[in-house]
Image (cartoon, rainbow, N blue to C red; front, side, top):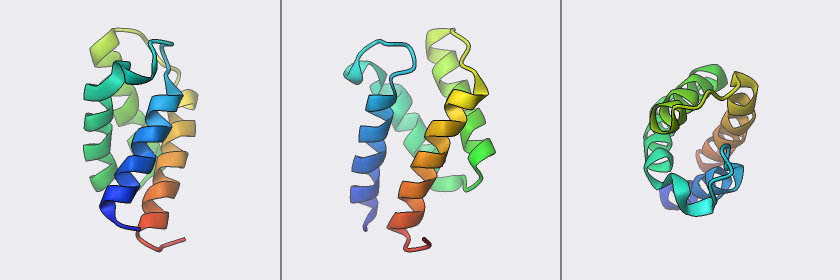
Length: 86
């Protein structure tokens, strides 16, 4: 799987995640920022913390780290699949 396919799957996962019930298309900036982090981070906890920081910065609403961990694992699974690690 190439990076384009990986990004499409990651975008779909993040749009479906919708932590603030703002609608699928409400997080374009946040999703773009998470995709940048996904490229460089490989540990689920590190990615989850960055996801939480990104979304909290935009919406000023706290997200439990457990919710961020769930999406982090899904995103990393897509990344590893794209790189044929799994």
